[in-house]
Structure formats: C-alpha cells, structure tokens
Image 1 (tube, rainbow, N blue to C red):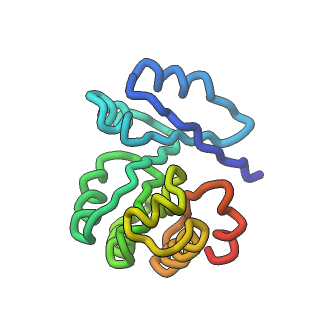
Image 2 (image 1 turned 135 degrees about the vertical axis):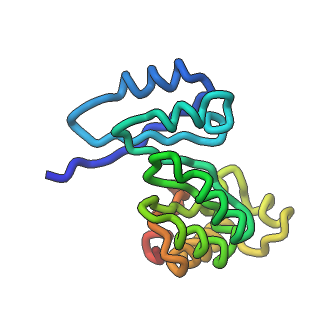
Amino acid sequence: MNKKKIFIAVDTNKISRAKRIIRDTQTNKIKIGYKFGLEFFYSKEGRKFISRLKNQTIFLDLKLNDIPNTVRSAMKSLKDLKISYLTVHLTSGLSALKALKQNSKNIKIAGVTTLTSLNNKDLKEIGFDKEVNKLVIHQAKLARKAKLDAIVCSGHEIRSVKRVF
C-alpha cells in the first residue's frame, strides 16, 4: 500500500527545535517529509544538521533564483546532502529551470510561482503586467515546459495550476 506523504515545515533556526519537530512527528501511519527553508539552512549549524539526517525525506526550500550557470553550480554544491526536493523561482527563466532540472539527478525540482505575499498592485510595481492568477498560470506552463516535477503555489491557485501542469 502506498502511504500518503506530507511535508512538515521546520520553520526555525534552532537545532533543538528542529530535533523536537522531527521527534514529535514520527509516525508509521503516513510518510513524513521535512521542509527546511532559508532561515534554517543558513543558520550557523543548519546545513550540518541537514547533512546528518538519515532515512528522512528532505525538502530544501531555497527558492533558487539566478542565471543558468549559477543554479547549476548551486545544485552541485548540494550534492553532499541527501535531499529529495529543491525549490526554484519560476521567474529564473526557462534556461535556468532546464539547467537545474538537467543537473538534479534524483532530486525533484519544484517551481515556485508568484509569492503569496504579492498582490496585483505589487506585481505592477515590480514590472509585471499580468494579474496574479494569470501570471501563475503562465509560470505553471513554463514549469511544464522545463519538465519540473512539482509546483509550489497558493491554495487559491490550485485549480488553475492543475489545468496546465
């Protein structure tokens, strides 16, 4: 029987808190994965802690956003970690998305759509001429074109994204 999988956010920069989250969420009923973001990864001992985890599904939410060569190099710099998922901003562009995917080996790449903190006014301020929902659909199509494995989006956008990705 295939167990359902969920990811638990380890939204802290404290190792003791991360250990407690992992310990307190262990179960045989469903498959648990752990999402570590920038706050934890860049903390003093965060990367070292992640490198020592054994038999865990790790989702590294770094939201890479750079040129193709840099995201390719970033992927290579993570090879010592046993991660299962890695995030990239879809605004990095098709070339960067493809470069990351081509170098990901067994790591699944999840494309991050427009950040949930941005609204239509914010998008206009930073130079986008599409409304949030239309931009997210456009980004989902880009993720499909780059053959990414997953998308991270707002719950409000799931129906739209499912139609194109």
